[in-house]
Length: 110
Length: 113
Image (tube, rainbow over all chains, first blue to last red; front, side):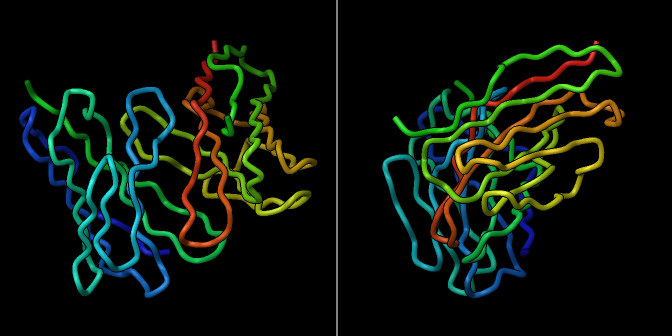
């Protein structure tokens, strides 16, 4: 399974866009990029996923580079409730054991 | 509403005792997973099951056991052989295919006293 690399922590001012990068340089053609977030002592929550096209939903946007080696999760107007650990993972088109790394701890500052 | 239920939310265990964590899902998902999370760490895979009556070890299976007798249920037993069992335990489920994400339970926090 492809591994991902994320910055350990980031800060973002409330109301501004939060841009969280993820490197997945060994991603293969059939692997999707997923983003989850985990608020302290809760289970991770699904945010968004994509294969090669950019995606947008009510929570966030996902920008995947053309070579698919990296992606960026964008929270367009960060609020204090977006303070959480954000995980970027890749998943194949089959049952697999996905690795969740330490993620990025995002702090939204008033 | 469909989802995954983990119980109990908090669990205390004396050293040397086995304890079983419950995980039930009504999403009709084929695959189920158990993860362990320590403070400030990511999620580490303990066991996973792709189908009833079959399961595979993850990266840290030693000291743990599971069963998958029903599609809806995937209980995890933390045995006395697990040397450092105090942690946050998360159960997840999914359907096959890369275009299908995981659904997580709310977790069980186990403390050995």
